[in-house]
Length: 146
Image 1: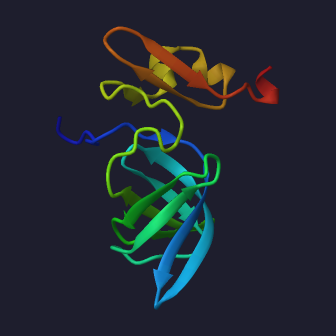
Image 2 (image 1 turned 180 degrees about the vertical axis):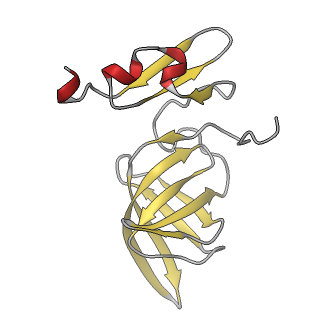
Image 3 (image 1 turned 90 degrees about the horizontal axis):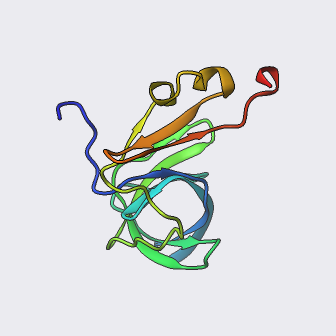
């Protein structure tokens, strides 16, 4: 569909602590970072340091202690929290993040489409739907809405 974002796999918004390891000029550098979003092909990583597009590095998942080779796919963007660095694994790794990903035919939608009272009961949310069923994920109600 025109304008619709196409991805090889579903991404999940989640913070996972990671260490980025890279060798630059013969010196091994380790950078503590965290993910912003993950999928089976890699992640968007928030890092205090930037890396050039094409840089090959190793991602260490601090929760599982698993390692994966990856490369920076495009120039990082600076944000108030650090640098947003898109990394892609050298091969798909469905179990690397140790989470279950939504099926590829599910699409994120605004929760107000699914639940009329969603906005009144929460500060926001995310819903996924398929032709069979839908699930709604909403944040806890804010104190003023309880």
